[in-house]
Length: 71
Image (tube, rainbow, N blue to C red; front, side, top):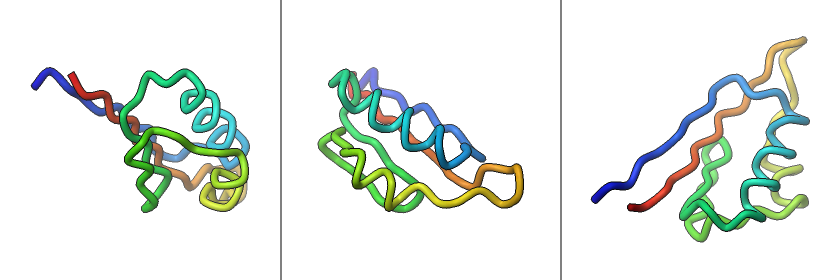
């Protein structure tokens, strides 16, 4: 298996929504996890991201994004 994951911590809410939905549209990932919600098909809608990406803590992002690519 030549798959891998890319993880981003402390992502601001606005960036979380933008990154998740834009990468989802490319079809390049096999899975996307927003905080604790896994999207095993790699597809995330704007509505889903808006609900699952959490508000910032002051000026610090609180979101964790994980992108899975299967080799």
